[in-house]
Image (cartoon, rainbow, N blue to C red):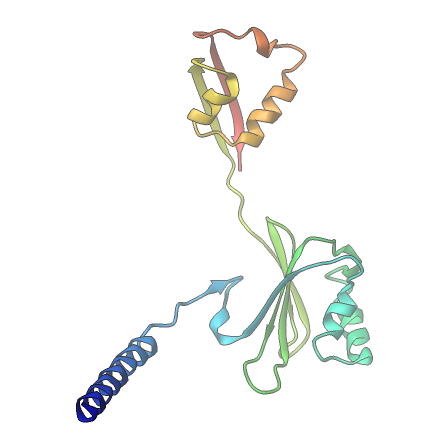
Length: 194
């Protein structure tokens, strides 16, 4: 009985060891997904994404990246002509790209004041600032239909953003009585969309 029990334990350990080997092989064979934003391959950097919080200044953010007071002052003086450091606002996104070596040196800082543009501050060789503006496409869109329910339901059926539906209702609140709309009433809306 003891021999059978010992034999079962040995078999179990052999099979469990083989399973672990196959799992580790499959984990190591997964290809690294390429993450690219702002023209940088994020796999080449240690990346820190965050948003500006109350009390944050450009100087305090840079100083937290292992830079001394003198270096921070010099950086602010050099970039103030092309990037006004006083314009950073609470809730706006920023990204720090640091080297992957043991020093983790700050190479780039990216600040996004809005969805249409961002600033890249290059700390690598010579300090420089680049403002990049994303292209904005404005499409003219027409929506027309016949009411089968409420106005907002019909806009939802036509895949219109609910925020736009609320804006339309606010704009026309004094000229259209939305409570007297009936089934079969027709409407048309022309608007520009980003």
